[in-house]
Figure 1 (cartoon, rainbow, N blue to C red):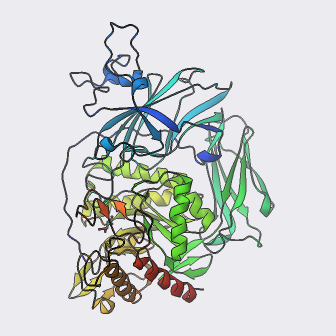
Figure 2 (figure 1 turned 90 degrees about the vertical axis):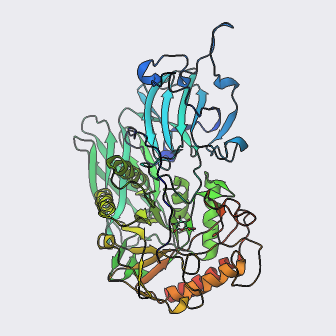
Figure 3 (figure 1 turned 180 degrees about the horizontal axis):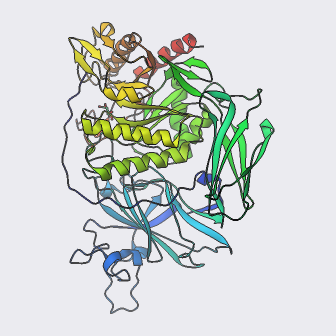
Amino acid sequence: MVRLKIFLAFIVLPISALAQGLLINAANRNSVSLNGDWNYIVDPYETGYYNFHSEVYDQKNPGSPSAFYNNYHAKNKSELVEYDFDKSPVLRIPGDWNTQKGNLFYYEGTVWLKKSFDYRLKTEKRVFVYFGAINYKAEVYLNGKKIGMHEGGFTPFNFEITSVIKDKGNYLVVKVDNKRFKEAVPTTNTDWWNYGGITRDVLLIEEPAVFIQDYSVQLKKGNRAGIAGFVQLNNTGKDEKITISIPELKIEKKIEVADDGKAVFELDVPPKINYWSPESPKLYTVFIKSAYQTLKDDIGFRTIETKGSDIILNGKSIFLRGICMHEEINGRRANSRVDAIKLLTWAKELGCNYVRLAHYPHSEYMVQMADKMGLMVWEEIPVYWTIDFNKETTYSNAKNQLTEVVTRDKNRAAVIIWSVANETPLSEARNLFLINLIKHTQTLDTTRLLSAALLTRNEKGVGIIDDKIGVHLDIISFNQYMGWYGGDLKTAPNAQWTTPYNKPVVVSEFGGDAKQGLHGPKEERWNEEYQEYLYQQNLLMIERIPNVRGISPWILTDFRSPRRLLPGVQNGFNRKGLISDKDKKKKAFFTLQTFYKKIALQYK
Ligand code: GCB
């Protein structure tokens, strides 16, 4: 089922530099929040960034009062200053600007945001500013000094500010730019809203001079008796030692730190351990202790493998009863623990044991709550549709976003699949790009499965799932829209599918739009009955697809998309949700719920 896609070409902008090593487990570090009201200035002409001859202030004349990051205030009434953060309105952070301010609903461009704060840094401590995510490009300045930049709208990053911070009167200024461009990841054309802003938490994190930056504590691939992992220190002293302890399992081990600050370890797991699973999402409190600090994390232990066409969790064959989700709730960017709980509770009610977080990394709350609530997770990066597969900078950007999400979430048992792409058009350049991303993922994490949402082709009425990239993947996933973008629903249950791969097959998307509350004959589009019938017929078809071991229909809730314009029905929303943007369930919700009850019994 090949779908018609329209591709646009847009302006070219340069790619920016990347942030410093990520501080993982930010929430359990010693921190203060910089969330709350930030003053903002909308700057479509980037007047605060370029002078009148288009030279960048921070390169040409960093101290210029006209550069907005200098947060300058006129010293007397005769001085010319054409901006003032303190007299400008405020945005709530975290939060997208589109749904907070009516006049920014369609805005794509630069907005400057400023937060003032005092901070008393203790002696011999270091301090970092941490952003959960900024969409899309961020240039960050503290007290008039540039401290870094970041590109990519859905992953965390941090910068050290120890030498710049003061006790009183700090001003943190962020230039956020969500203009779309061809070489970006994602590219100009997506079927979701390009929410701009500082969309996730902002923290000041205080660390000792030598601190634990990163660690991995996971069962070895396919081995339920042993944990393998590492701890990475930032900076090292002499003869550093790290202690890993899991009191509930009576595990405690001292490990040596090598000269590069890395400590690699293995631990035996006692036989009475409770493995993490959706039915029993057991998390153990793990302590990672250096001479200067102790970090705590709640970690689940499980193995995930494939064998032939089976997906095997803790040694047992499973079926992924999933649903796709965007990071959106009630027509705005979801951004809190409360939002994550609300979305995942619906998935649970549906009977899911699995969610596909489309089409970019969602907030850390989502994976933390999935860990606690017992939902397996597919995570993906926005290598979506027609990104620029020929561009080296596009590749390094995608690779960086992948690195950031794997780094952030590698200790979450819930995460079982890393996906590198969605519905990308076939070409040699694309194959190379994806294979390189796959290889890169394997260098970061060997314990999870790899996939990508692929497209299929049709030959003489048979759907063929044979994308070449499948050779490199653990799970063959594909999207198909039988009965929506093509195909006949009446005959759908008899449709033939075939694949050359002896691997698990997952239908990563199917679905159709329905406007909640609209009722009528099942042959008429947009009715709830049409969507219900589409689910019934697709589920009958999917059960017969060879090697099928999971599905994640499109999608949990209606979500905003600038591509969905039909008045009275879509009104700017993709209506393929099983739940409306007003939290109302549609009939197809219950069709899928019934199907999942049946499948759960089959895979008991
Ligand atoms: C797809 C895309 C998804 C779209 C969906 C749709 O294949 O992966 O991002 O939103 O179809 O509704 O057309």
